[in-house]
Length: 315
Image (cartoon, rainbow, N blue to C red; front, top):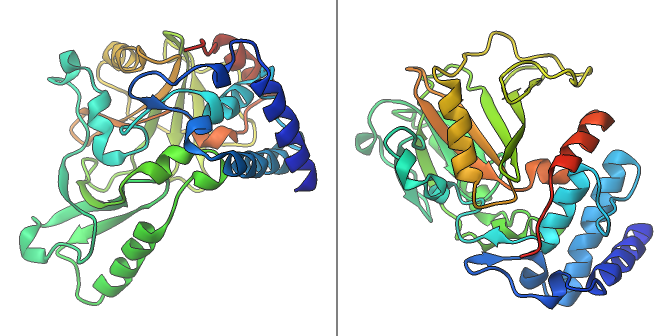
């Protein structure tokens, strides 16, 4: 951790000295940056933690002064990039990213209930069926449930939900925007009707689709396939991971592409995640600006290629 602290201090000083760098300008209207969100000592602490985590995963420190790879550029963005608030990371506000022109054809899964406290909804308030119980302010805070709930399962579910509400997510290593979200519980309809939901993650860099990541996180072991902008398998794949088996293809691939480009248009980078419902309907899952907290493993050639495509423009 001492080496990570020294590296954090060294690189932060270099960024502060940049001519026309992020410390010499204000954030864009409606946006905030890590350098605004953290007080000075907390900024160094969060950057140190992030440096340590990156080194622990990859064996080297990221270069956020002159970043070249995709992960390095996302790493820098967490601290110096303009993040749209309050929408970013808030599952209750994801639908705000959908442009008005697309709202007749694209939406998020139906929201059934949300609250900043327990108890969970009574059985007579929720139609029988399968749902996802989630917290709105972090990754991985969800559980599939079926209504009506059994009396015996309510205490464990309530304890899990309370743990989510108590969790301060992301602030310790740079994903500060999650900690700014008012924490709530939510119940979302399962539009896949219990079938595995494969995520179609479209990486949009400076108005271009860099790649499409087909991701089945429910599979054991995890399955990932990388596609190009024409939905064809990329020449680069992660050899250690199985490919997604028999995915349900979008009924209108061109619409998925055009929707991703429209949603990401205001940003230098956004990963726009879709999934396909049981009836073939396309849904927006989330819009993320720091995929896997800049810790995704990819072949070195793909890291370099995606990094070359992405240019964060001074705001």
